[in-house]
Length: 228
Length: 228
DNA sequence: GCAAACATAATAGTATTACTATCGTTTTTC
DNA sequence: GAAAAACGATAGTAATACTATTATGTTTGC
Image 1 (cartoon, each protein chain N blue to C red):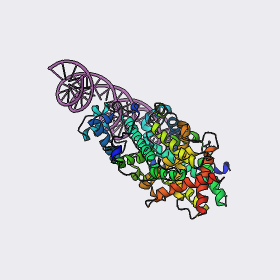
Image 2 (cartoon, rainbow over the protein chains, first blue to last red):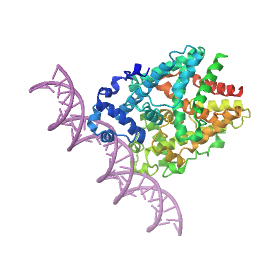
Image 3 (spheres, protein in one colour):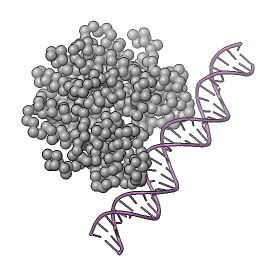
Image 4 (cartoon, protein in one colour):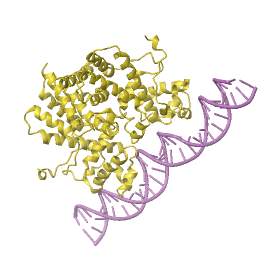
């Protein structure tokens, strides 16, 4: 199966970049090392100048790929959620039973991220680290609405939609499938953040607890709604 | 009761400010108009210079109250969560029944914010607007851990603890009370954010749905755990 | 009533950031 | 082998987030 998927690419809205970084060696290095640099130092301290130094290239060359660092972050986030969507579809597609399917979906979406050899120059663990630590920074700007119009967040919206449908499939009369889906996705990140920085605000310390917490949360809610 | 509480103040960790803004007229104007300005234009575009112009004062004077704009945001967040804690205690203190108490707590913590005349120069609605739109920006910096050590987030942590205890009181054997508490607090903000900017990612459009969603979520989870 | 202490205002200056613009060199491509 | 595209190097700009200094007004104690 690995081989079958060798020529896969996560497709990203071309409006997010000036020149497709997947199309050249330099572009790939920008993404690869950009992930490392942001993961190591945080997004605020990240600059194109520093990234240029790191990859032995020039600031101005990076601007030929990305308009600014905010769009670069949106690119990385789009990639991440695109990758999540691909994994979600891949892992749940063959499961017919709605409850088993939802269970698998929860596993894919909330479990700790591991490296995926399918995508060579992306370090998924470091990227997850970015998404956890920068959380919803791409959304939290005065320009959200404009950027939303431009379709920058389509991947994420599609993922929430898919996940919401899987919840609905378990209990069609439950009226908050989308809210539950978006809550689980954002809260899972948030819980990982708390585990790393505010352990006194979570109970998910040992591995497994994180997943169990969300599984119970979702299935309790859905089951209760079904029994009404 | 209003009168009884006239001389109340939300206490904030003195390390967050250089000079207590509650101690002078200028300080109060800084907070009052700072809230308006951030609420109107977003935190990124907010500068002390602009705030100075707005209140007919000088940039340098504002620096005598707050070290930088990030600490100003932490101050506002601390005030907000301190206010939430005060409301939580006030509204639930007299309720003996754990389930009724939790229900009230959920109402206080997730319902739409309204102006509170107890605190004259704070516009709670605008402040809530900031907290929703800037979300966890105060946390999301490379310096979280240091700032956490300094105690900047004590109020929030205490609030999560209290709320977690109320959940535990309903079902002592439920092992994820803190995670559930922190999830509800952050997700409620997040759902309000989605309602404003990404309505396709929520089902909480009509008023009331938001509260019902979280009430069902919490009580389903807690009840299911109690029946195990 | 007046000096000391304090709060505030005004101005100038600095380092960094987030770019833009220009131009020269290298590499690719047909 | 010429044209086009990609890349690198340098310089420059406007805004930001401050710091430093000095001046002006205001309060307070005696």
